[in-house]
Image (tube, rainbow, N blue to C red; front, side, top):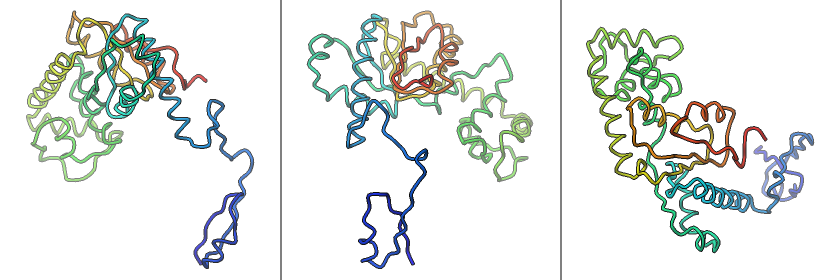
Amino acid sequence: PNRQSLPTASDGANPRKLGITGIHVDHHESLKLHPPEYGHNADVHQDIAALIKLFVAQTVFHTKDNDRNTLFFLSRDGYLIHQVLQTWKNPLLHQYFPQIDSADLFISRAISCWLNVNFNTDWLVQSIGHAFWLLQGKATPKQISALLGIEVVPSSLTDREYSSDKDTFIVQEAYVAAGLTQEIRRSILDKRSRALRYFRECGLLDNDGATICDVGYSGTVVRDLNTFFLQEGLGDVPPIGFNCISSNANYALNSISALPHIDFCKDVILSADT
């Protein structure tokens, strides 16, 4: 018969009326989930809404305190936080901080990883590693070529999945032997050129400074931005901060790697350290 696990408060008679065998599963006390101390609302969505509003207020205060005038919300998760900022009618924010501008920043790890390619080292191995990383460590040659921005696939590579831990150098040698190195290089340089043009057009590099906002967790994308700015030798990068709701163990490490151009907020609401 069909079976349904029942929480403690469920009435086992109702499933039995429907011809379903009901089994009560009682978890050990240590396995039961409890709302964290900041919440305890009957509806978890109210807890989440309160967290996001707290984050929005914190970010606005932090941005103005550091003489920055624009908030950028990192796609995709940051888009929802931006919606809260635009629709939340908080009188304090509207009365005292009306001059803060906001916009969505459309950049993800799938884009930012090409911004930290170092052409002074073994950049092709690094780039192939990025392609594997974007596909969780396994990819076909066609997928790798697509991510590298070329249409050609080395004929020496068979149509199967290759893995980053075993096959990275095999894949690299195949692209080199096929004479595709310079085509890949041009493709990556084009990605970087278009990214820089976008950063200038969207206002991220305006001189009034900005804060980039996200849900979390480690700040990989903004760390890559700092690497890119340094590699490009940009002398006109304004002060840029990074705020997120939650952080993981890599946040502290990335906060160091993101300097000097990106300043990570030290007061993360849901910090990995708490």
